[in-house]
Amino acid sequence: MTNSFPEGFAWGTATASYQIEGAVDEDGRGPSIWDTFARTPGKTANGDTGDIACDHYHRYAEDVDLMASLNFTHYRFSIAWPRIQPTGSGAFNQAGFDFYQRLIDKLLETGVQPWVTLYHWDLPQPLEDAGGWPVRDTAERFADYAAETYARLNDRVQYWTTLNEPWCSAYLGYGNGVHAPGRQEPEKTIAAVHHLNLGHGLAVERMRSIRADRQLGITHNTPIVAPATDSPEDKDAARRADGFGLRMFLDPILLGRYPEDMLEDLRAAQVDLSFLKEGDEKLIAQPIDVLGINYYNPSTVRRRAEPEPEGTVRLYPGGGDLEGVKRGFPESDMGWEIEPDALRRLLVKIHTNYPPIALYVTENGMACKDVVADDGTVDDPDRISYFDGHLRSCRQAIEEGVDLRGYFAWTFTDNFEWSFAFTKRFGLVYVDYATQERIAKSSAAWFAGVAKSNALPEAAV
Ligand code: GBH
Image (cartoon, rainbow, N blue to C red):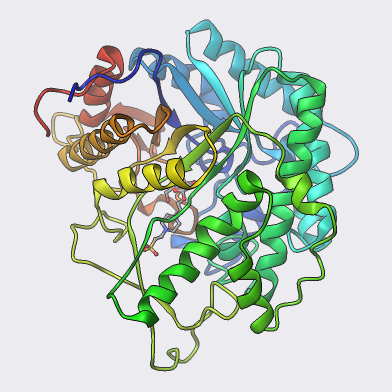
């Protein structure tokens, strides 16, 4: 097998607005659910917020120069809805568009292709106050925002994805509440899933009618689930975890219908499905051009026979007996298991089970305990071997027929890691938050070599 990637393979890094931008009160930006959540005591590590983060709003030009110097061909970033439409409906904010215009101009000038994510979790707070994603109106509001943003920026941006990881928005936001808005109402999560799917479909329909020849799609963190044992109970647990995590999202978009076994389970768990209207599945199934997959770790589940521990908050309605277990793989600083081959299996599975679609790995990466050495450098060999292993896995998937067109490392610089705030580092570039100094880690140099040669080194790292 060759170590080269197909010609034109996209090499990028990915980021998200709230994790890097800071400048939360500038130029007319409104508050998002992440501002509110992060400012609520006890929700994030050390009570930290994204108020300043990497100060990317002011440092975007230097950041892009550094990115270009590392040979990246593409950059996946998200647009902050509350900069564009401060209250989530009604008036648009010109200064918000101006920032992204400047960023896009700078990218194109330096030869980096922009890839836009329209929603990476920063819902305008007034929309949450009106009910958030469990409410249908939020999907309509998202489509309005997406259409206007696309109308203004489609001239120079070829790649557009609607949502980043709606799994997180629905189940972490409204199920166990570890993400904004922090609600613990698992019975509402399926309404949130549906309205996220619907918002995606409505947005794609509107965007396509404005200009048809752009690459439109969505990014999912679909899990690759295995049962802990071969017992019928664990196999059924795996079916359900795969249903909640992968099929409730990919089936309506790519097959035009929700999985029947999941709808049956939900009805049996007394979940009110009246939000599902005639014709919705058709709206969700707009043709798309690209599917982004974010992958970090394998998932192994069992069916817990014992009752849930006191105080457990469920992720899924009727899912109290689903329990993740570890297989004994090495772990990242997040405590997530590392199994590069699972990425190959995930890509092959999607390729096998769904109609043909161009796939991109839109996130993959590892948190490490990075430290600055006395000579001012940051050496992160574990991250290099994580990337090397997962890229070999991608290479293998391509060999097996998967139409994989690109790979985005998570992430460019260390940044605000949601509820873990600044205690976890995922970057190729180290950030000293006291000074905002950027230091390219050894993984950045390694990646620059891969991107430049469009190939992996001969021997695995
Ligand atoms: C992504 O989410 C986000 O898009 C990005 O913003 C974020 O910074 C990045 O990843 C790193 O976290 O139950 O222990 O097996 C990642 C979504 C969902 C990945 C939960 C890990 C299971 C952990 N995550 N998942 S575990």
